[in-house]
Length: 398
Image (tube, rainbow, N blue to C red; front, top):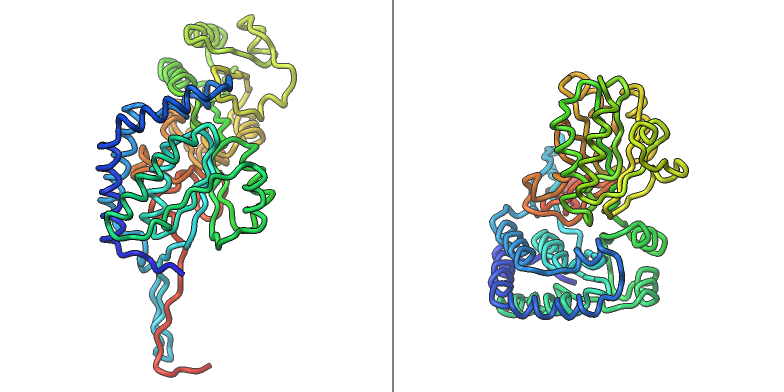
């Protein structure tokens, strides 16, 4: 059984890891180039997530530095009560124990998610994808060095180099106690994990985010927000996939054509519902099932609605429960939209690309949960804890 490491030890390991990443920057990039060379797939989003460049390493180091400076999330008193018989009762945050993180293609998760889980007092099991194996093993070696340098057992961070069959066997019959599993990746990975896991799973990562252009929208804002959401990074779960335009918007067809023109300059494939396709001469969608899809590509579907209520209903039916944004100058309508759309993050006149632990002031994230238990949206350091009741008595019996 592992006792929770002191906060001083946890912070020392994170600081050492940040220094090691800087020292090993060139070697890590060289190892990652081998992974990129070995990658034979044609998934552009996967390839972008696989790349480790200077900007990615800077992000890893910053994440560790921010984590080191944050308060210990373990042992926070959440509730205090004195029983009429004199017992002192309190509820405090506690580490989960062991957290398994299953992910595809992103070596930075080995640092950032691992760091958040470790700072929260947990043992970390990492199961990365085969396409990033060399990069992940290099980073785990750095974790082990950071642990060793601070007289902490290397077993606190463990890499599971398993194929699909071995992963399934471990999920169904773990060879060690696992308290929480976080799958980070596509819908197939999440479905596979949920199907076979024997402990709680936090569902993370599916986007299919919507922007709704209300009839009182500022169209310059709308264009900028849609272009940013769709094209700034196609490989992330907070990217934009769907746009709805209120046909009560004055001259909505002119706006629709301007939007199509702008998106085409970024080589985005555009599909529309009947009304939008007719107004812009773009291809019409084959059927409504496409509204459920997350693309992770330069692809977008744009449709029309005739009311705010219709937009809210459509978003709640098709979205992934991640993020949705309304573009309007009417604050009352915006608030109504935000209160009634059932997503983890709702926006007024801003890009869905901000749904991110670092952008929300959490100092990074373990994942973005589209579940409602136990935490929704970006899961930061302060959310990666369970709780425990402490009861102090002097011989009381009931």
